[in-house]
Image 1 (cartoon, helix red, strand yellow):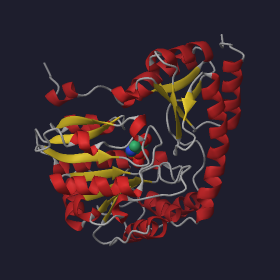
Image 2: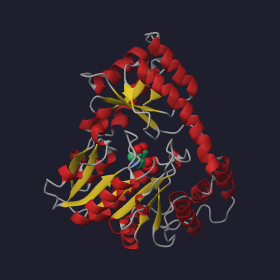
Image 3: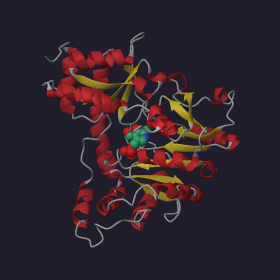
Image 4: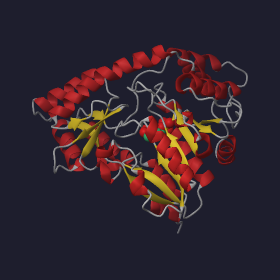
Length: 387
Ligand SMILES: Cc1ncc(COP(=O)(O)O)c(C=O)c1O
């Protein structure tokens, strides 16, 4: 009998992979499902990006293996983007590594820095991949609480009461997914000081800083950050290029080299045309963000109405691609989203998929056209299900 690796017993199939099968089955039965579950941008990338990939097809090198570190122009464009939008100076030669999406970067970083049994601080609630990758590499997830009362930021006093001697890595993600909370300068400074006190590598996963957020920040901007921090970033949400799979990891040369050691043994470079498109995206002016956010702003107004119609409350100061909404007391998130799916054919993510502190919350994505959001509101307000 062929058996599976033990590590497979440490993880489950991704929630959306399972739940979307159920949603698609409902669709195939003719239910007009409105999908507000997943954050996959439905808008177009900048047109110059499409032009660049199209033109690149005729380049002689387009179909060859590409450099493990990406094209020099791509690394320069990434460093330029960090300088222009975050005020962070990075060497394009040694401090920037293009990735095929930042999700993959979570695995590369974990493989580069974690040994079996090392502990990893993971936000609860937070992006589920931090936990599953930690388990896949044989390390141990240790969850730290994020709660509304503390603006979804770490409580270091409480954290330091526990034994941190085995902690090697800490995931933070500001602006935070799923809550949309942002970190102040002080919070970033506290994170860095905490990392230094305990000799922990902090990774800020930062894919949402340009969505409905007036003050994009990078952890690398803060004093002393490069000694103990890396940052992941992505073109998925900033430029509507989720399917293209372009991300990046940024930080100190030695850390980037360690990640490259892993990555260069896993893939053989990113498709040339995608790199050419990514370069153009990164050069977009601020106008791009303004026009992108005007669409999301209008959608968010509708989603707020929808949340209210579903008796939820929300924080109007939150940022990002989602509305994180609090349910009336005593309602369970998974029961509530099942009810919304059944009664109104609207799919919303339950907060519990992001951790136990997501109980009592649901997450609406802004990745649906305004007409669908209007239809969703009408369905809920009229109290009609769709037969
Ligand atoms: C917090 C967070 N990190 C990382 C990712 C992965 O993004 P990418 O498309 O760059 O792999 C996501 C995607 O939804 C996310 O929400």
